[in-house]
Length: 110
Image (tube, rainbow, N blue to C red; front, side):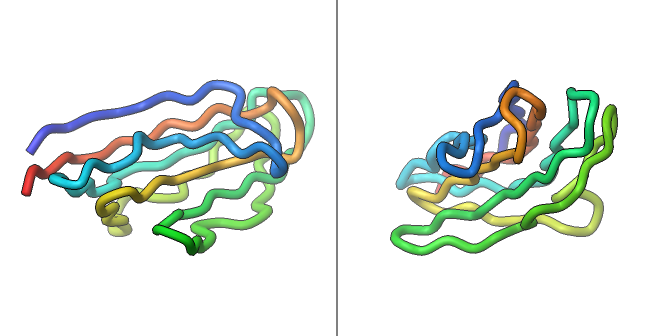
């Protein structure tokens, strides 16, 4: 197992969400151990994140308010998310260039 992290500055809008994780390879699984989105702007924003599995997806969080200078911890502590082959996480903000996302994960080669 290896610890990894990825930073995505200025995540996209709902019409063009940013993929904030690498696509999981067929021979591996990832355990998402942290996902935070920070408001880098001067006004409240709404943020969302989705787990994308094949042809379906589900919200991890939808339209959560993040105050200026604040951070929303979506995954961490007792909550973990397992990502399997071809899975991704996408995220977006209600205001362009107003949010940064950070993910931390473990990679487990099968």
